[in-house]
Amino acid sequence: MVKHMGKIYVVGHKNPDTDTIVCAITMADFLNKRDKTDIYEARMSGKPNSESEFIFNKFGIKFPAILEDAKGKQLYLVDHNETSQYVAGAEVENVVGILDHHKINFENTKPIEITTRPLGSSNSIVYCLFERHGLKLSNELKPLVLCAILSDTVILKSPTTAAKDREIVGTLSKELNIDYQQLGMEMFKAKSQISEKSAEHIIYNDFKKFDFHGKKVGIGQVETPDLREIEKRVIEIKKKMEEIKEKDKYHSLVLMLTDIIEEGTKLIIVSKNPAAFAKIFNTRIKNNLTDFIPGMMSRKKQVVPMLIEKL
Ligand SMILES: [Mn+2]
Picture 1 (cartoon, rainbow, N blue to C red):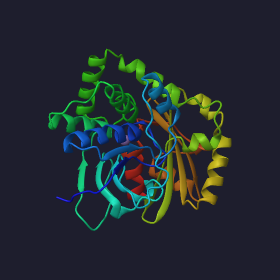
Picture 2: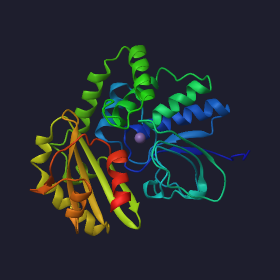
Picture 3: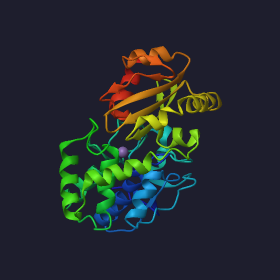
Picture 4: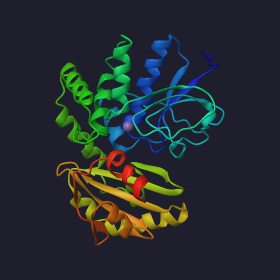
């Protein structure tokens, strides 16, 4: 076994969401307990979004420090593996482990530890690791794990939701005496508080960069209990997306406006050929927006695979 020297930073993807931040904390805790060490330290890859702020405040937990520059640092990646989503300075050869629930797009030159399962949240995988190793998830971390699963599975409505996610949410909400439906709605309200936010903030709030056969595509998602508020700002948001596309040389940008009550999505598409996107998703564009696409909730399961295949 490779002996690691010095600290190993456990860190999630750029533009961190709740699952990614919480997973850095829970996975660092798991690894320290499993290896009977204290070399694993959780870090954030950037400023938290409004949903994460709400959750950490509600349960009185402190955020980990931000990892400003990962250059030369040993990293344990959680909730991502593709280089396009790495924190600044991170290098593939310094990655000593990966825990993820996304597709794998990773190549290095030496053996490392990789744990991946198709569960709705990275934290569900960490929960399973605690179980499998007979270790205890601390009471302090339980509400965070519950929130992370509710966040990534859109309160268990996303098609990414696995039976194990439901089981863990059931167990934790019982143990904590929390009504998870109500907690989930409070979280998504906090996440979709957009009235006083800039268009740029809305686009980057939950945003990921991809490389689809050499085409750089950015996909953001806004999850809201009511699409009407954000629909009023579509022209302004689209204009900002056009600016970002030019400035950062994207092939295309897509913003998913997901209604978590009606369970479906409208897309804003900024591209040379938006009709091609509309065709891929079997929809039409009218007034800068696609039609409502019923059932579309998940970027990872319903948008990314389609674009890999057909773009
Ligand atoms: Mn995740």
